[in-house]
Image (cartoon, rainbow, N blue to C red):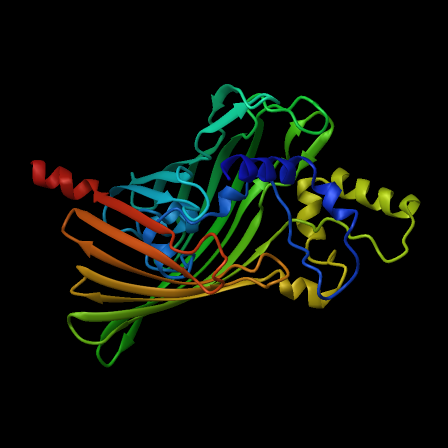
Length: 392
């Protein structure tokens, strides 16, 4: 199973045009937006994951680097650190996992720097010769290292920019496409994010309203073979969040995000369209730059506006907090069935002390055949400023 899975991943990234040639204009034909390094869009932390993959406008925390680095400007503590772990696709294979480390430091009243490192391992793959004899073991992986600077523009509004280095080593000596050499792919990207945070007064106390936007992974294309370059998952995320105090000890927040990949769709071949017309359209897709692809992604779907609406993913989540120490979370994520068909509920729990917090999240897929079903996330966070005060 592992060998089949990894082979499909490599073929998807290096030979997507083989699939696109057979697609036809039809409402009932799946037409997902294909990108390389899709692991960049996997939620790394348990809190956001347990609320249906919501986080661009939620209350700032140590894992804001992934959701919206502009939120760090509103952190109460001066410094924090988080470690997250996700055993991925456990229904298919036993050793694929995602690890993530994120941290921040506010070095002045208005300025905060942050960084994160994510490492996605595809586990161990046993290579054999045509007779079935073992040759060697390879360990394909993808990683991303980024750093961000957030600036507090006013007491209610902040912005941030992040820079990212991406490395994807899927083949490790494996050759596909008739033996054509493959090599690790590298790319650079940037995020631009904004966050609005304001106090809202209710009869039961002071609450909070937040709104955010993050355009992530704006950058170069990535290549695994000479002459072929693929889009990375540039993504637009918008969201709002409202925190409501029920009384002195009980609070509840509700949040919603919408996402759209800013990547053009692979051209589909029209019924009876000759190759002499289709192949230039396909080549134009591969020749499109990443920046031009962002603008093209809003108007390139073969089904027009109807198809563009299908590309929008949405999610909703809620968090109940007791005394800001115990947390219960739930959410729902929805992706159109023709664009990937990820639909799942999520739930999670959290526990927080003065300088330490532990969160867990769990996915319950709507589609029983969905390999994401029963995915578990664990996050551990530390208030570094609080630890420093305790030590003193």
